[in-house]
Image (cartoon, rainbow, N blue to C red; front, side, top):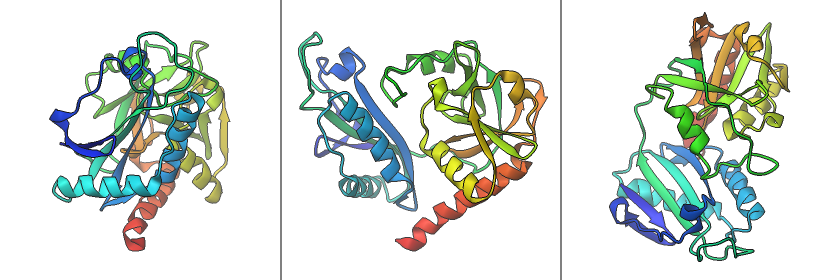
Amino acid sequence: MWAWMNGEFVKADELRISPFDHGFLYGLGFFETFRTYEGQLFLIEEHVERLQKALDEFRIEVKLDVEMLVEIIDELNVRSGGTDGYFRLNVSAGVHDIGLAPTVYESPTIILFRKELPPFIRGKEKTAIWLNTRRNTPESEERHKSHHYANNVRARLELPSLAVQEGFFLTGDGHVAEGITSNIFWVQEGVLYTPSLETGILAGITRDWVLKNADKLGIRVVEGLFTPDMLHTANEVFVTNAVQELVPIGQLGSICFAGVEGLIYLKLHERYVKQVKQLGKER
């Protein structure tokens, strides 16, 4: 597996970071995950903007360049046989002494990882369960995609496999939050519902795409604080993330939903696939 680190292409097994990197010592780092489609990136500007916002808030001094990232990603794909890949852009605070002395991090560690895409069947249904692990609160006013991932890892341990099942978090107050690696949507009487960012969930890039495109399709969307019983009476449920796209949920515990046959899911999924396919034509 190839990667890119601080300006150089490196074989994955040759990557090295210092134990004094504050990304290791204090979990101070942020990342984005995405994939290519026939070499093209979807919503990359939005991913970079979200990551840059987190870096700026925590005074990690780097200005991400989309054009440069696209060139690096192209080269990583070429070095990996020319196939599409799964990418993680990771920025940690960089090397400093033990202690919380720095007021600014001037030399971050930047790594762009590439790995092969996992087996992927677009639109394949998953099941879901309610997690015993509660969603923790964000590190700041809004949740960033950060190295503080123990809450997600703890939840992951409740499932045998994320490939066929997703776990749904509740907040400490008992409101529906998000999946371990996804945002949650459901449909009731033609209205699309999703938890508000007020719950402390990640402002997902694909989540935002769904909100914008639902509006364009004339689908009413309601964001808010919801208890599990609201979701239990839904007609359709689906989850979203940048690598798996829009994933229908066929069953939550013993409750069944429309799954891949959900009408609103199908409208949004068709639109998403159409936009992705359009990328190759625009190259």
